[in-house]
Length: 330
Image (cartoon, rainbow, N blue to C red; front, side, top):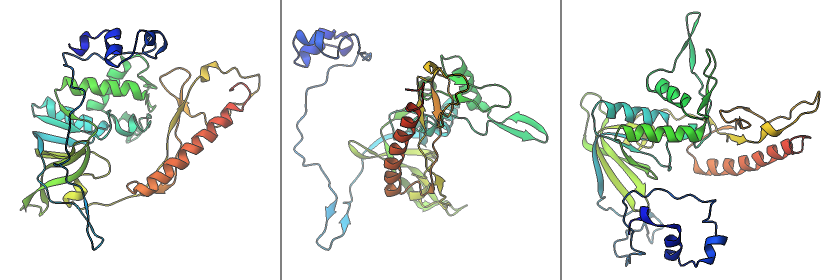
């Protein structure tokens, strides 16, 4: 049976649930099912004896050693773009529109990078000065994206002259999926680039290593993608750093933006001032975006990132409670 042909009752039977569950489970009118297009049912499970595992070894001298193994190659492409944020999506779409076979790798389950998953929804640098005249700096694919966002419900606001627009993260995720699939780009999500594949020889013109692709870490282990051209748009140098390219490592303000909703229901009394931490408008009525900034630290140090993540979550909770303790914002 095809999954697309499953009724709700069939699904519940497969899960071992009786008819009573139809009324009391969360699989009623509150749920939604994806459209599995002609995808056949998988077997319930597959037994693995573990003989193909290649774990990292702890040697008697205390050193931890990764065994040398041959990696499976899961793709060969003309252009490999690593990092599915706005820059990576634009690079991949541009390459694909030129007729090149293009592959896009992204570590999360969505596109947009910090603009979506990081909720950095304000498009900074949208305008610049040419002499004494203000002109729009974002053109090309960036402008195409914003025009398409204008055609989607709650996609973007503040598209007026001289203002930096603000987009909705979820609408932008959807738009990027549309544009990536329209361009027929091969996609690997949930795949973290962990190494570069380089040639034994260096570029005679520059002396730099010749990059032939990248190694990605997946739930099935490390796998290789070969490419004629590799573009690193990870923001952290996940490919060019292990490839040995010269670079400058900088510190960044590491914050944690968040959104606050239901503000359209607030009724202020005459003369009452709104509380702090309400941020800026978003395309969704009643929802505002708060750009909570943080200290300038090393953005690739996992200990630093973990410490800040915990701290910032607590700070967000504290700020929200301050807002809720304001009359009218309960």
